[in-house]
Amino acid sequence: VKFPWQTHHTRKIPTMSTTVTLPQESSERQPSQLQALLTACEAQDIQNATNLLKNNQKEQKLDPTNTTDIARAQDETTGKSALMIAANTGNVELIQLLLHNGAVWNAVDRQNKCAGNYASEANQAACDVLLRHAVQCELLLGAAGSKRNKSNDDDNNDSKLNENGGYLDRHVEYSEDGNKLVDS
Image (cartoon, rainbow, N blue to C red; front, side, top):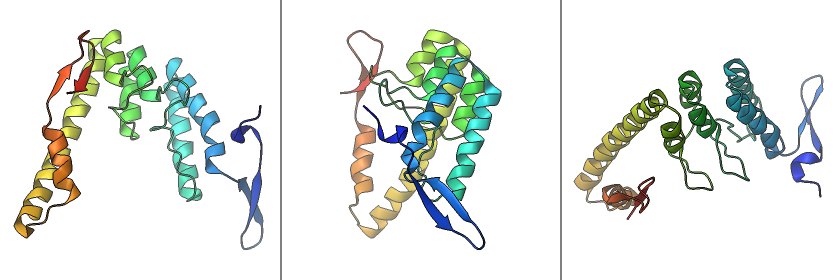
Protein backbone atom coordinates (compact mmCIF):
# COMPACT_ATOMS: atom_id res chain seq x y z
CA VAL A 1 0.00 0.00 0.00
CA LYS A 2 1.37 3.38 -0.99
CA PHE A 3 0.32 6.47 0.87
CA PRO A 4 -0.13 9.74 -1.03
CA TRP A 5 3.07 11.21 0.39
CA GLN A 6 5.10 8.18 -0.76
CA THR A 7 4.38 8.91 -4.43
CA HIS A 8 6.30 11.82 -5.89
CA HIS A 9 4.10 14.05 -8.04
CA THR A 10 5.32 17.39 -9.26
CA ARG A 11 3.91 20.44 -10.90
CA LYS A 12 5.92 22.98 -12.83
CA ILE A 13 5.66 26.65 -12.07
CA PRO A 14 7.00 28.95 -14.78
CA THR A 15 9.04 31.93 -13.64
CA MET A 16 10.85 34.61 -15.58
CA SER A 17 13.63 32.44 -17.01
CA THR A 18 13.35 29.05 -15.34
CA THR A 19 10.89 26.45 -14.19
CA VAL A 20 10.67 25.54 -10.52
CA THR A 21 9.45 22.05 -9.64
CA LEU A 22 7.50 21.72 -6.39
CA PRO A 23 5.65 18.77 -4.86
CA GLN A 24 2.05 18.72 -6.09
CA GLU A 25 0.43 18.64 -2.67
CA SER A 26 1.92 20.45 0.30
CA SER A 27 0.74 17.62 2.56
CA GLU A 28 3.23 15.31 0.81
CA ARG A 29 6.07 17.09 2.65
CA GLN A 30 4.40 16.96 6.04
CA PRO A 31 4.98 13.37 7.13
CA SER A 32 8.75 13.36 6.58
CA GLN A 33 9.25 16.83 8.05
CA LEU A 34 7.01 16.12 11.00
CA GLN A 35 8.65 12.74 11.64
CA ALA A 36 12.08 14.39 11.46
CA LEU A 37 10.98 16.99 14.04
CA LEU A 38 9.47 14.32 16.31
CA THR A 39 12.71 12.33 16.09
CA ALA A 40 14.81 15.43 16.84
CA CYS A 41 12.65 16.19 19.88
CA GLU A 42 12.90 12.64 21.14
CA ALA A 43 16.71 12.82 20.78
CA GLN A 44 16.64 16.31 22.39
CA ASP A 45 18.52 17.61 19.34
CA ILE A 46 17.80 21.32 19.66
CA GLN A 47 19.95 22.37 16.70
CA ASN A 48 18.23 19.96 14.32
CA ALA A 49 14.78 20.95 15.63
CA THR A 50 15.67 24.63 15.14
CA ASN A 51 16.80 23.99 11.56
CA LEU A 52 13.67 21.96 10.73
CA LEU A 53 11.39 24.70 12.09
CA LYS A 54 13.27 27.43 10.18
CA ASN A 55 13.16 25.45 6.93
CA ASN A 56 9.44 24.81 7.37
CA GLN A 57 8.81 28.53 7.85
CA LYS A 58 10.85 29.34 4.72
CA GLU A 59 8.86 26.80 2.69
CA GLN A 60 5.60 28.31 3.88
CA LYS A 61 6.74 31.75 2.72
CA LEU A 62 7.91 30.46 -0.68
CA ASP A 63 4.85 28.30 -1.34
CA PRO A 64 1.54 29.87 -0.29
CA THR A 65 -0.23 26.52 -0.76
CA ASN A 66 1.95 24.96 1.95
CA THR A 67 -0.22 25.13 5.04
CA THR A 68 1.67 22.47 6.97
CA ASP A 69 3.15 23.96 10.13
CA ILE A 70 5.20 21.20 11.72
CA ALA A 71 5.37 23.07 15.04
CA ARG A 72 1.58 22.65 15.32
CA ALA A 73 1.19 19.29 13.57
CA GLN A 74 0.44 16.00 15.29
CA ASP A 75 1.37 12.46 14.28
CA GLU A 76 -1.65 10.85 12.61
CA THR A 77 -1.15 7.51 14.37
CA THR A 78 -0.39 8.54 17.96
CA GLY A 79 -1.66 12.11 17.93
CA LYS A 80 1.56 13.23 19.58
CA SER A 81 3.03 16.60 18.72
CA ALA A 82 6.65 17.67 18.93
CA LEU A 83 5.76 19.65 22.06
CA MET A 84 4.36 16.54 23.75
CA ILE A 85 7.54 14.63 22.99
CA ALA A 86 9.71 17.50 24.19
CA ALA A 87 7.64 17.78 27.37
CA ASN A 88 8.10 14.06 27.94
CA THR A 89 11.89 14.55 27.85
CA GLY A 90 11.64 17.51 30.24
CA ASN A 91 13.98 19.57 28.04
CA VAL A 92 13.00 23.15 28.90
CA GLU A 93 15.00 24.74 26.08
CA LEU A 94 13.32 22.51 23.50
CA ILE A 95 9.87 23.20 24.97
CA GLN A 96 10.51 26.96 24.80
CA LEU A 97 11.71 26.67 21.19
CA LEU A 98 8.53 24.88 20.15
CA LEU A 99 6.24 27.27 22.04
CA HIS A 100 8.04 30.23 20.47
CA ASN A 101 7.37 28.67 17.05
CA GLY A 102 3.64 28.32 17.67
CA ALA A 103 3.26 24.82 19.13
CA VAL A 104 -0.22 24.23 20.53
CA TRP A 105 0.17 23.88 24.29
CA ASN A 106 -3.26 22.35 24.94
CA ALA A 107 -3.55 19.82 22.10
CA VAL A 108 -4.33 16.25 23.16
CA ASP A 109 -3.10 12.99 21.68
CA ARG A 110 -4.99 9.74 21.12
CA GLN A 111 -4.53 8.86 24.79
CA ASN A 112 -6.18 12.15 25.82
CA LYS A 113 -2.88 13.45 27.18
CA CYS A 114 -1.55 16.95 26.56
CA ALA A 115 1.98 18.33 26.83
CA GLY A 116 1.27 19.22 30.46
CA ASN A 117 0.56 15.57 31.27
CA TYR A 118 3.87 14.54 29.76
CA ALA A 119 5.73 17.38 31.49
CA SER A 120 4.31 16.36 34.86
CA GLU A 121 5.84 12.92 34.33
CA ALA A 122 9.21 14.50 33.42
CA ASN A 123 10.12 17.34 35.80
CA GLN A 124 8.87 20.48 37.52
CA ALA A 125 10.81 22.87 35.27
CA ALA A 126 9.00 21.55 32.18
CA CYS A 127 5.66 21.94 33.98
CA ASP A 128 6.52 25.50 34.96
CA VAL A 129 7.35 26.53 31.38
CA LEU A 130 4.13 25.06 30.01
CA LEU A 131 2.01 26.46 32.82
CA ARG A 132 3.48 29.96 32.40
CA HIS A 133 2.76 29.82 28.66
CA ALA A 134 -0.77 28.52 29.22
CA VAL A 135 -1.57 31.26 31.71
CA GLN A 136 -0.26 33.93 29.34
CA CYS A 137 -2.39 32.54 26.50
CA GLU A 138 -5.52 32.39 28.65
CA LEU A 139 -4.96 35.93 29.96
CA LEU A 140 -4.57 37.23 26.40
CA LEU A 141 -7.63 35.30 25.27
CA GLY A 142 -9.62 36.66 28.21
CA ALA A 143 -8.49 40.24 27.56
CA ALA A 144 -9.32 39.98 23.86
CA GLY A 145 -12.67 38.39 24.65
CA SER A 146 -13.67 41.03 27.19
CA LYS A 147 -12.88 43.83 24.73
CA ARG A 148 -14.91 42.11 22.04
CA ASN A 149 -17.77 41.33 24.42
CA LYS A 150 -17.86 44.97 25.55
CA SER A 151 -17.93 46.10 21.94
CA ASN A 152 -20.67 43.58 21.14
CA ASP A 153 -22.70 44.59 24.20
CA ASP A 154 -22.46 48.23 23.18
CA ASP A 155 -23.81 47.31 19.78
CA ASN A 156 -26.40 44.85 21.20
CA ASN A 157 -24.95 42.26 18.86
CA ASP A 158 -25.17 38.58 19.88
CA SER A 159 -22.34 36.92 18.01
CA LYS A 160 -20.52 33.60 18.10
CA LEU A 161 -18.02 35.24 20.43
CA ASN A 162 -20.66 35.45 23.14
CA GLU A 163 -21.42 31.76 22.59
CA ASN A 164 -17.71 30.96 22.98
CA GLY A 165 -17.59 33.03 26.15
CA GLY A 166 -20.15 30.62 27.60
CA TYR A 167 -17.82 27.73 26.85
CA LEU A 168 -14.97 29.44 28.68
CA ASP A 169 -17.23 29.92 31.72
CA ARG A 170 -18.08 26.20 31.91
CA HIS A 171 -16.95 24.15 34.87
CA VAL A 172 -13.96 21.81 34.49
CA GLU A 173 -12.96 19.02 36.82
CA TYR A 174 -10.45 16.22 37.14
CA SER A 175 -11.24 12.78 35.75
CA GLU A 176 -12.08 9.95 38.15
CA ASP A 177 -8.46 8.79 38.21
CA GLY A 178 -7.38 12.37 38.98
CA ASN A 179 -4.91 12.54 36.08
CA LYS A 180 -6.80 14.66 33.54
CA LEU A 181 -8.65 17.95 33.57
CA VAL A 182 -11.87 17.60 31.55
CA ASP A 183 -14.98 19.61 30.70
CA SER A 184 -17.96 18.64 32.79
